[in-house]
Image (cartoon, rainbow, N blue to C red; front, side, top):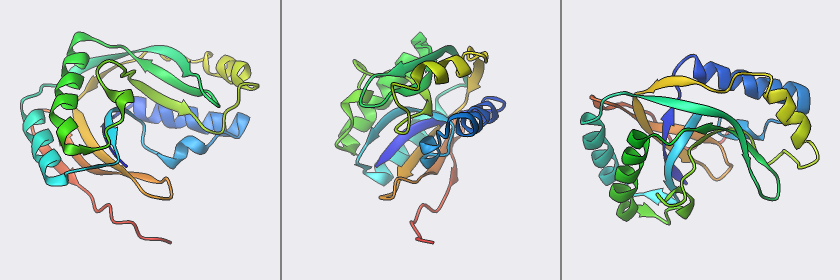
Length: 192
C-alpha cells in the first residue's frame, strides 16, 4: 500500500508520540506504532505509478506555499473497534489541495481508497486503532481529553509513504512546499 501524507511539524510530532507513549503505558495500546509516523493522510491505494506520482507531487508542491492547519479535538470512527484520532479542520485551502491531489493521483493509483475521495475524506491524526475496544473507549477518551488537542501548525509538506506486507510503514519521498522533492529514502524491505 502507498499513501500521500503530510508529516507533522514540531512540536506536534513530539506531542503525538507522547500521546502514543501515554496510551501504551496506561492502556497497553501500541498497534498504531506499526505506522510510527505522526501524520495525516490525503490519499491512498494499493500502489502508485511511481515516477508519474513523484513528478506530479514535485510539480504541485513547487507551486504551493505553507499554510495554517487547525485541529479541533478528539473524535473516533466506529467499526469493529474504535479508531481514536485528532480531527483536522477542513479549511477551504485544505479542501482545495485535497481535491487537486485526488484528481491528479486518481488515474495513477492502483485501487484508490474511496474513503479518501473528496466526498468521503475525513482528515485526522490517528492516536489509537485496532487494539482498542468499545469497552475501554470511555476511559481512554477521558484520559485523552485531559490534554489540549486544539492545535495550530504550519503545513509545509507532502510525502509518499509505503506499507510493507508485515504492516510496517515508512516514508519514501518528502516534497516541501515551494521546493518540490527534497528527500528520498530507500524503502526496500529487508527482513531482520
